[in-house]
Length: 199
Image (cartoon, rainbow, N blue to C red; front, top):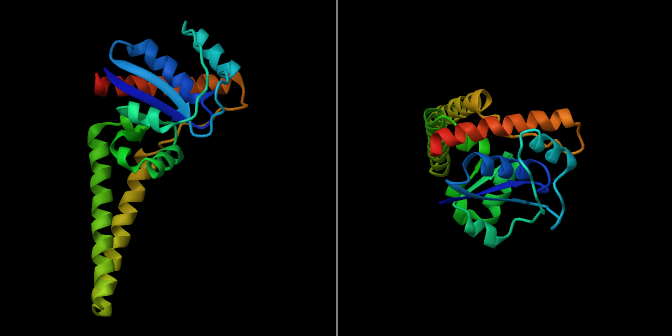
């Protein structure tokens, strides 16, 4: 059984919501936990979280917890709510880089993901070639050409990111129940896409 850890900021809104939803959708396939980067241990889920889940017939018993090395090592897959959470986790646990992604990334169409990865690799390669050429004191004209290639690769990457990669699920903390409902629907949608890919 695959072990999934959802991570958000305080572990009282988005990640407990995602945990409860995935448990409800696929508890036979996944063992699920959630945690927060800056969580205070033992807090209950935010009241609106309970309300929107109860509307779906999903009960929730929740006690917030901070992300720990033990939890990170436990997980096969760590799904974050934002790119910021992802970056922070990769910085702390670089050995788990392959397992850490945003929920939206994990739910993405494989083709689009591959296209994006290729664009990243192309940009990085051109960047390295440019840096090497600079170090080796290549003529100005050759440097300009390589610099232009780096720019083009970067623009392509930005275009793809704009089009496909709004990878964050916004924090509803302190907002209305209606906002929580929207966030819950968004998490539900991406979990269903995730399940289509992974089950």
